[in-house]
Length: 280
Image (cartoon, rainbow, N blue to C red; front, side, top):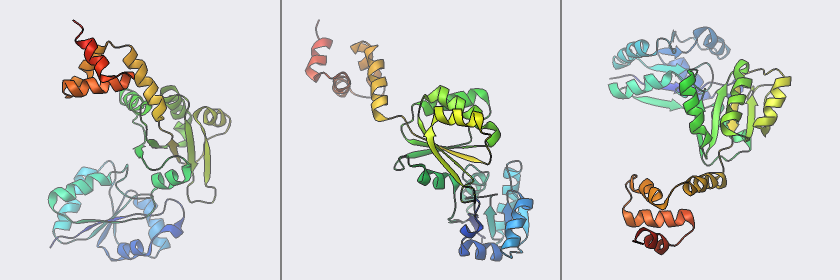
């Protein structure tokens, strides 16, 4: 019988956020796969956990996943932990989980802290619809493409950033998105937790004077529906009605539905569009 992979959430700062279920699981599994064993040993010692550890990180995630799956198929129970928070979120654990599913190894999650959700709930920004971007890619072309996508995003956006890259990232976000509300969260759940609701422009002014410290979670307001609508109207005004129709028909709309949508976009009646298209 195969063993199980346990995804164990660990504190993002405050050790009191460790759940009894996670402590018990880490004590009873056969092995703990940790992102950084040197960091995790401090956590395990604090909770008097003596289970053997092995390293599982970005640079060995595929090869080590195969090894761990082989062990689990033989009956070994494995707990996966990251340096802080919930494994597999912006983390190499996602590879191990996917490979477990492909191999028929059971996976279960022991929920707990996650910096992205903690920051979202503290941000004061809309929480019904949101997207998580994690760290922006380092490669320039890919980074530019992601920023262009985010410029049109209407959901609340969550990003991670290191202190030494914060000002550059704020500059790029301001350049791509324009002025937006943003809440910057640092040292979450720790003694010096800081939550700063502000705007991109004011955040830039502040951090050009104050040195950023600690890991940051950035929670950004999405583009308002009104802004998006204005942009769409502006783009439609640059189209002929024929081009506007072709735009929707290329998306698979039939001609009647496309006429209805074009009329709605332009604030006209469907009969007006029909009459224009059949004027000859």
